[in-house]
Image 1 (cartoon, rainbow, N blue to C red):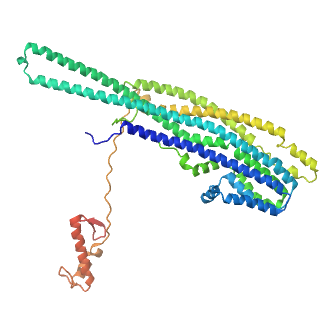
Image 2: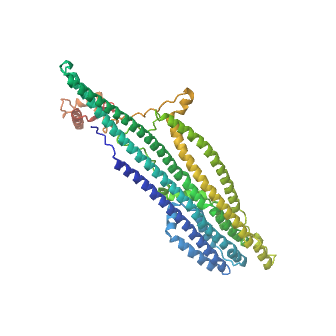
Image 3: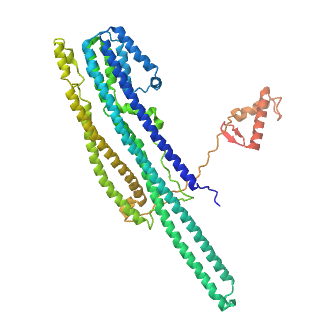
Length: 563
């Protein structure tokens, strides 16, 4: 009986279900994280709206009121747990950084201005409200796509579970058929051995006929069990091949989701957020620059932070802060059943022809899908560029509102004819939302196509490796793959000596001369130094212990030796 313990069906299924459960829990936590991020942005935008609304009212007052306003929001931020985490890890999001700098700049404000108040009320606050609506809308659309991606992951894991169970079932039947075949062979050998012991001449004529019938019966039973074993072995091979192919496809889909799809989904949530927020802050900057040139130094700091508004950087910071949620899980490993040593796709007859045909079908299908998906990607890139053009329009310059030669009526007319007029707002937002809907439809189509391609490509690559396409093209034959060699045991290196004593103090001749004069020497030598005898005695003891227990001692030259 082999000492190797194979996992039972229940243990294999339990391990697989545990891994799938961990992935599902991770998917749930991803949505929670993205939802928290969306709520944090909405809260940030609400704080900004409240801030500028109050600032517009206080602009007519003196600098003391502005200091109180800034202090109010600063204390609120300092007491928040999110601020403490950011301060500890120094992982400030670019939008949050801009918010901090705006508060610092507010402390320096001291002059009232009616135009600045009008710009805050009719421009900045309205933009922030629009950004809040965009954040909610984009998060809902991204969440719908994320749910679909999660369902796809659950689907592929369920398919993998099904083919794994099928493989286990056929492998069990194959083992049973093999056992029955061995029993039949043993009975045949036993019958033949009995026949050889008997003398044929001693048997009566009437005893020969039943014995011949019994032999034919055993041979028929052996042939029947041999056919049953071959059939079950073929089914097991096909089931194992399907299991390995689905295993490769599942690992490819899971890896693609965690490496690419999650990042793309976060990009969808961030689409236009940083650009719109940058436009809002640039409107604020333009008003402040024209209001007072003495404030340029502080505003330059804010402008630098606005220039650094970067969705990619914020995305990386968010994923780093929650790395346990967004990191890819472990690959699904091949789980052999009941000592099955075959761990790769079998390309030998009778499944070789079927695999070759399947390989060519996959190759043709992949070529078509890649062309179609590339066209979708080009359309997606063009749509994204259109959205970027809409979201990065330079409409934040309000310098015309500070032309003092004009009357109040002319200033109001300039503001009404600007980008923030109701007619322009309705038209631009309608175009933006229509383009967004088209973009999300294409993004959904691209994800579905790329998922199908990655699954088929994984199966194609595994079949190509199994069938040996490189050698088949040159030699005209298909060489079946060889099984990987068994790992060899590594010999552990011998530990180095812990002792570093030098015998005879490194010089044997000098040592003997000193011992000749030692009066306490145990070997008859004489020495004027009482410590010499103690040294000699210690060396003698070390040599004696080394001979008894293989204790390392130092050689005359100081190198590590063993006696």
